[in-house]
Length: 186
Image (cartoon, rainbow, N blue to C red; front, side, top):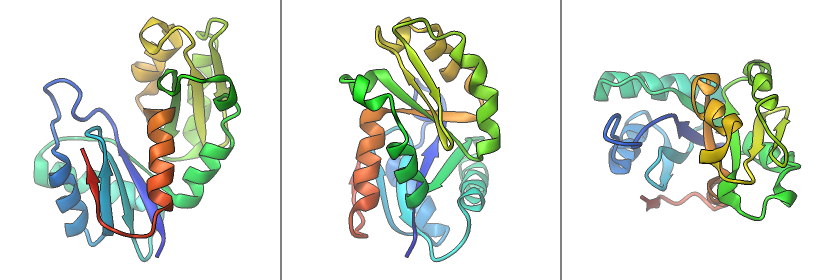
């Protein structure tokens, strides 16, 4: 059965938009998804679905959160194949020994990627920005909090995206590659 990863934007950061991962798993199960597991406490879930496109799953999950939890949460869903391609095309990974300083910006559709091109001009060397075919990548050598490009990507320029650091992306890749078993972390 096809696997997908759901990435929720802006939850469990500070006191606003709190969604316990057990509640997220239950919501995904109610939507008919199977093999649901979560990673960390920041809105990462892996699930199986017999059919449907990633964009439809994203819309369904976001609508269910609005209906059941009364909060608007943007959701990006990628298939296992899409996530593998995003991991594979990250040319910055070999230059980023500190995975927490390498961000991956996920968009639901590739048509939203050109909107992120403006972030590139904010990257100050030795920072690196790469616009891929399925995601954008930003290596903040001095740290994300010190980066104007990172601030833009996490702020207004990144409203249509959700970001994860490289360590989390690699954990999601490993999780989506596992045989389907329900598990939770976070």
